[in-house]
Length: 256
Image (cartoon, rainbow, N blue to C red; front, side, top):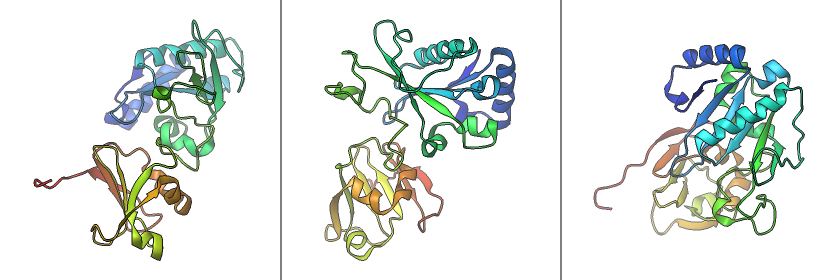
């Protein structure tokens, strides 16, 4: 089986051709995505739905080599005509810890399954997320789960209405015009230090910048979820709600 760590840099047609070959030869293709400074690594299968009528598998936050092995190991279970059961504790996926599979919410498919969408030519792809436990064998939803791992694996069965990795009460910067006049956010900045700015088309000044909770912005405009994956030092701009976001690297003034 082959995988591709930089599939976003490869010609789409070539990648789809390779995917078809690997599905016929091995039963699936594994897509691997390296971690960035902001976003976790992840891997997912393509072909389990086509070959075995089984949801695809995705997993986050581990080394790409381990993710590759895990996807293949789960695929071997499926190839034996065993169905992975949502919500069941599995003790044979990892050597000394539990694993569980969650159903990926349809609204989260397009964020992570780009090559699968191109392959199947549709977005309604069934998928299950393989979730691992921390060093104390706790799942993310269990009490006392280790904080350092909280953002290593977004839980794709939920959070479809709030996709940002940060907490809902994160302090973010926006304008008084957004709060008081209902003006549209047309520019989003993710600073190198992690701060978020959600700006209207008004001139930025200390007089019109205010601090609000991140959730407050998303509740008012769910299309802001479309830029949840802006990297540190990136910005996105649009002209109106529903417009396509144009992303770019953030340029800093020399004097800053």
